[in-house]
Image (cartoon, rainbow, N blue to C red):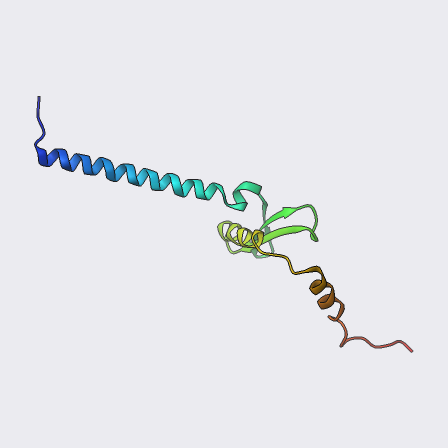
Length: 108
């Protein structure tokens, strides 16, 4: 039977503590990934032209979408879009109502 010296025992204890800390950090990172909107809501992923699209919703008016050069980038953009706030309804109506003012021509 081999008895470890005090130095080797300290080294082994330090290595065990280091590995435990690394495992804890990996668990924290994994838990954080599972809280991402793209993981919780699982948007559809498809190619739109030459870009990837992550899309959640039933129609184009009420949807959240993210676009990117790769599926991962589309999911990151989806997460950003999920956390964006909507414009107030009055601002949306006013900006949409005046979009075509310059192109208006009364018919004779």
